[in-house]
Length: 370
Image (cartoon, rainbow, N blue to C red; front, side, top):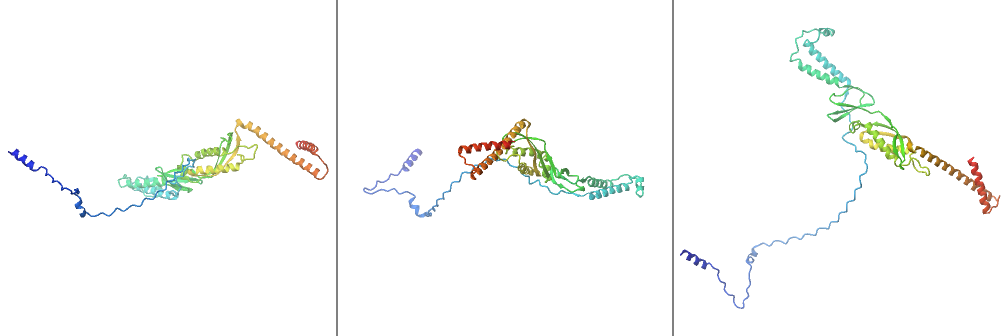
């Protein structure tokens, strides 16, 4: 019975049949959302964006040149400044007062021998031992005496003290005489006098590859003690190495001798010294060294090529001398023939003129040779 009722309900809920359209009438389907368009607000039209201006193409990056050789960079953190220092008499006075205070404490405790007390005109006191009230002033005065007397030092003219604390630069002391510097600071003596250094014969080559031996004399001085002491391990050794390096670069630009032409050579020691000085000054500025002069005192060939170059030099000098003699003879012959013909003393045809020139040349050249 229940099943029959369900089937009957399902039959009633079936699809409703549509009526047939009228004959001759057009049928148009209306979308469901069209009747509700009037209630919606019309949105304003989206503004049209102006076309973005065309960007100019970026130029291709220029190729970077290969990094060349550069001088060492100066460390701006290392710059000499005045260090903490006091006159020596202040340390002596404070140390003396501290020792006198220690002696007074010991005297009050009776620990000073009677003979010493009597020598100073004091009244001896009975020794009662060092109590707890005596140790603090003794320790304090003893530390003051150690600091005051331990910081005393003698500074000589032409030298400076570079001070450091736990590896950090604390200043430079150029003061001379008796000075007091904190004993907690580590001291390093630096020579700031004008100095000169003469090298041993050093090997080098000229622009033609010929082996040379060169001796250089350098006049220099430490200008910045902080850089000289801390920027390099040993500034004197650094200078010697830079002298050899700069000398090799300067000498390789020119030939040692130009036998058959007038060209700059290494025999122009003034120009070579100027170039060497400029190069050395740039290399040593980073370590606080000022180079005043770097002059080659001797430039000679190495022993293995010295004899061959000596013969070549003699031959070049002889050829130059012969050329000078021949030029003077030719000028003399030309002047003689011109005077003879211009004054009408002789009349010469081409054959006779050539013969006269030949005879005069032989005569003049023989006379010059003698």
